[in-house]
Length: 281
Ligand code: C2E
Ligand code: MG
Ligand code: MG
Ligand code: MG
Image 1 (cartoon, rainbow, N blue to C red):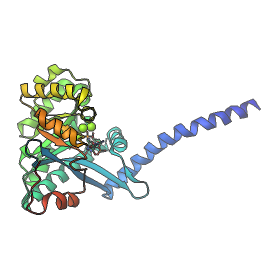
Image 2: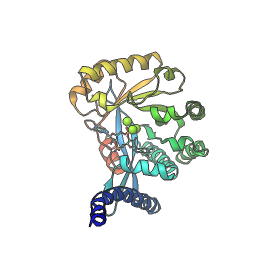
Image 3: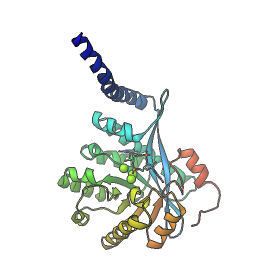
Image 4: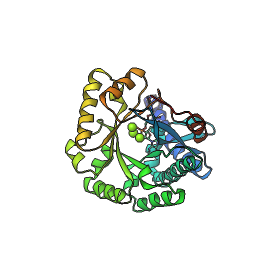
């Protein structure tokens, strides 16, 4: 029976598509529940000054451990949070946690670290976002220059005048700005002189190509950054020889699994903030 056969062939195909769509619908529902039930956590990855090996800051990275499915990657749930608008609420919460944790470590006698928080395009367009930032700073007592917002090139290019206005408002309250995953997007180099940023984060794909071609690109980024008075963070440092190369080249800050993976606040404090010993290069 032809009709029946057709349906059977289709049936082999449709469930796969439905499964992907369903997974995303289920994840959105579960993400709402996770926010309500506080199943989300902010983890911290250390950042070190390249020339001295001194711990100078952290990047805040959102984590979701689903009670049944285990850890869900931000690469999977951040896009869902963006599409559903949940990222606005979630992003405000990350800001608040990040500022509170870093301020608390300092109050407990730790060093005055900076904290970098990732941003989504949706937050940038949200009129209340600047208020969220000032509230997170006020509630934690963290000085504005200790907070840094990470923006991607694609986010900035979506609406350049809007992005510049946003960046000026952020800089006006003293908060710093970085371009994340630098070199992988489509922004024009000309924008580096118009965007009021403080830092470039070289994408880990270049760090992983070191020395060779990755080296050529990172040398160029370092020269550009110096010209514009920006500092450079190399992310995704996994090998000692990459670290050596970056130190020789004059990179400012390094971050990566070699130096420390993202960790829960308690684990971070236990590993990096307890005891008098300082990490030296
Ligand atoms: P990102 O901002 O570029 O963060 C760096 C990512 O690289 C993190 O992945 C981190 O765990 C990973 N990483 C760090 N060191 C190494 C290394 O040496 N080797 C390798 N292979 N990877 C390394 P993660 O935590 O899975 O986050 C993925 C992305 O999700 C982030 O990329 C960021 O774009 C986004 N994200 C995470 N948290 C947030 C958040 O709170 N808000 C928003 N809007 N986005 C977030
Ligand atoms: Mg980042
Ligand atoms: Mg990055
Ligand atoms: Mg990224």
